[in-house]
Length: 384
Image (cartoon, rainbow, N blue to C red; front, side, top):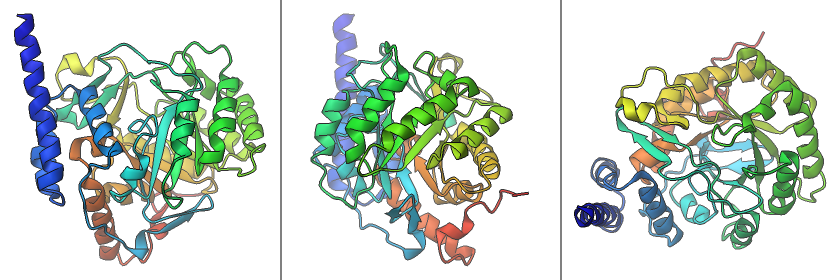
């Protein structure tokens, strides 16, 4: 029985790994083949195993070669940085800075690594990553698995291209007795290598972390991290990533505190603990962890619009949640996001989707006679 089980696992590994490698080598620029054949076959693998294989291939530069879509209309100036596209990769994919340079070649305007914790930690026990295919969603409960600050610092020190905009997402160790000190370590150690920094207070998989978003703790946190950032010679922009499960009053308080403490931007939003209107099997829906993907799209949009209004459009917002197409990107930016990140859509559609989405953004702008993507930001938000 045990041998048979191992045999099935090995067969799936062989089929899934062969599909990914063959798709990269033989059908490099064919997005349809990649998304409809390669990625579904790769899903024969366990979700985390598939993720690790993708990271390993990307770290060796084994990625589809595509002729990148370039369009002046997609260029954005924000946070003192120049982005070739508003579409970036969210934290959670390249946790340990293994392949961020290679990912740039897919067409991302920026790549965010992490979440990085001060000390190495394994995270939560496996299994901890689940595909909800019927919902185009993922549930994860990784729990900030990280190789730690020293490992990531060594990787970032070897970055190939200065024009590759890299954000660093910072977290705390599970058994830490001082969260503020953990964030300070991340800022001081990794800040000199980052184009921007993100304080992650919104993962649902680290006990007590989301309590840092409450008014009682949030101002203290922001004062602490800004003070540490200001010690750096480079002074990279500092953003805060928040949860989608906040009440409207909590969000308003957070926005007020962000303005008061002169935080450079907000990332809206992280994964949700909500399980509304899902179609996947019940055993998957009930897995503990944060839900990402298509079910988060509208929730994220409404939260972005509220944050845009509460800050009166003065605080740049990076919108995250359910991006699968160019239309999704434009929609999220009309709600108030100045930049957009994807994660689940990238996992489901594969590496070639990035360039396709950039093309679709251009098509959306052309259809609306918009000369630059910045013009659509906040169109749906009604400032009073």
